[in-house]
Image (cartoon, rainbow, N blue to C red):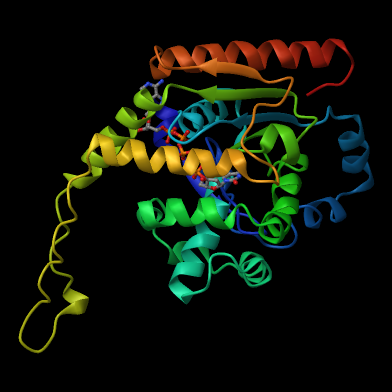
Length: 302
Ligand SMILES: Nc1ncnc2c1ncn2[C@@H]1O[C@H](COP(=O)(O)OP(=O)(O)OP(=O)(O)O)[C@@H](O)[C@H]1O
Ligand SMILES: Nc1ccn([C@H]2C[C@H](O)[C@@H](COP(=O)(O)O)O2)c(=O)n1
């Protein structure tokens, strides 16, 4: 898919990781100014008039448990519909990675909220590191702390309310997008699948990563007696291990007191256990298009 190849990631204020099919072409990159305000303040009166007449941005909220396919469907929806995408889980993963790197306690809400408000530039943490099992579990723990959630909330809402140009709307995926972050989203989906199906999908992903060729000794790490030895390979993941880790995370995410994992009352629950990616995407697209049409008919635009 051409747009898939054109996928770009960009950093916006508040350091959310977002991507959009058109981001590269639009030259969108890194947060100058305040994403929620800078470009609006700079508008001419004519542009402000046009903006006032423009329909509100389309917002698609996708929630669900780990490895259900939220990110996959969110990215494809964004490409098909010309929307910007934010993977809100990466926000919590970045806080967790920073906490682990700093040796911080994972239950110290105020200290972790301070970390969340001052995340280092995204480029400094490779995405593979953010997706490690240690970071996944730590993200689930830090995300249960109300101060951490509060520190990350506004950036997500700003992104949904003011999609970066030229996007007409946004797709956000996570655990509480439809219930807390964007309760008035145009379309909501709760994407799920059986724990076994999700574990099998995650295992395939991990096995593919595991079998990637080792980059080999890093020249930069070479000492006087030659290159540093390659690190010992990580143990191969097992289905039982993946399933157990995933259940642990899902249970913690669903049991927490603040913004727990749960479908919004008005979300379409899409069980993808027996669906391939294209089938899941087709069902999601049909729902979003129907909700968008209903919103337009009701005079609410997006
Ligand atoms: N319907 C599907 N059928 C088969 N594989 C799928 C399907 N949807 C997603 N996958 C695969 O499952 C894996 C997990 O998908 P994805 O990363 O989109 O899940 P997620 O819900 O965003 O997970 P997390 O919350 O842990 O980030 C990926 O390797 C993806 O390619
Ligand atoms: N909106 C969100 C998104 C994510 N989290 C937490 C809970 C998850 O276990 C963790 C990692 O998310 P993932 O990358 O797997 O989507 O982050 C949350 O609480 N709220």
